[in-house]
Amino acid sequence: MTLLHLPTHWGGRTRRRWGLSGGHLAIVLALVACTNSSPPLPRANVASGSRVLVAAPDFSDQPSFSDRTGRLPVLSLQSLFHSTYIAPGDPSRIRTLLVTGDVIPARGVNYFAATRHDFLWPFRPTASYTKAADITYINLESPLFAGCRVSAAESFTFCGDARFVNGLTLMGADVANLANNHLSNYGAEGITLTDKLLHQNGIQTSGLGPVAVIDVRGIKFGFIGFNGVGRAIDKTALKEGIAHARQLADIVVVQFHWGKEYERQPMADRGVPTPDDPVVIGHDAIDWGADIVIGNHPHWYQGIEIYHGKLITYAHGNFVFDQMWSEETREGVIGTYTFNGTQLVAATWKAYRIYDYGQPVFMNPKDSATALQTMEAASDQLAIRLREPTTTPVPAMPPPPVTAPEHAPAG
Image (cartoon, rainbow, N blue to C red; front, side):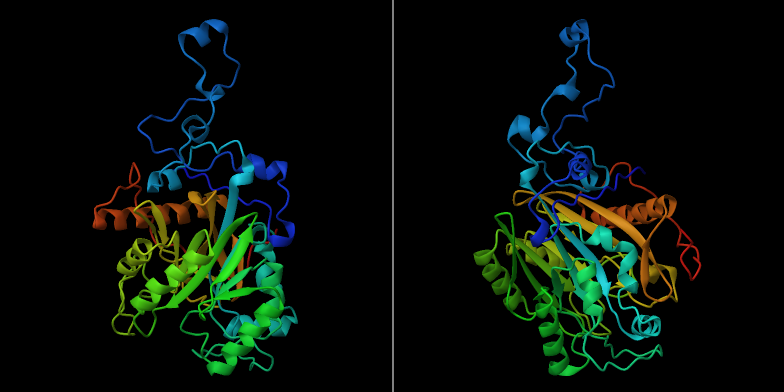
């Protein structure tokens, strides 16, 4: 499998969204594959002579699919995992949304950051990447407040030091989803303190009721979140929430905390109970007007689905967390979702591994290719189950990852 995974970041956050660098312009030239019936157009390395132009036009001299037809490409697994499409010539239409997995600066992460006296430590290796998107959206699964007890001992009651908010600003977080099963570990007071701390530092929140709205050069993104771990998702509230967000925004982003932990495929976990099937809930969200669905909670990254032309991501894995006890829980992907106007046209995923109980570091090319092949194979397995189109050819599922060192390699 060959997967082009390039960052498609444009302009950064609100305070730096007004210019496009030449490097970014080059990066976006390989976004998503056009899914019309025509085969990929060949590219010439030299100029065509007059005889060649008469006999066979040099198609690489032609405008992009969108410029030629006025239509944007239809999303598919093939177009997302095997990108060949050239972006339209007007980069001002491009907006990027970057999404991480679970951010849990608690327990071991809190302990090692405190002993280092460095609450930026978990975020440093990836910050230059995560802050470069127009919007960076995280799932914050731990209340943050002064006085959180520092302990690396195993506990399922999470909290983190309030100084971690400086790490969130370092990584460029614009919106934090708070609809999950651990944000309430310290009751209403913990939620209130966390929400206040985030807003004081310029980070909006989703999942507490109000829609987080961010305007990116005239296009408004609206963010809402729902927790389905330990209880069923309220479908009436979901439908009404999407409708309300639609009134405020051009692009509606819905994040869910859902599904069975430590699985590569989305599924319910009735023993927790986490009774909802993520596939059913994801489809409902799209049917009711969501433009993109973001999933988290299983602690493993999972595959994606294209449903009615919209993207559903089921899980991005852990991002900042201390689950070093398995390789699967140490791995995750950062998703960058690229919009042309209000339509999603491309997605890339950048794989990383967690070291030292809390610090994600981007994988080397070989390991990254294996992770992305795993993600593609998982997406195809889901598509086959749902009788939806797969990629071609369908890749084999790689074996489980081998044990990596505890400490990140030097350099």
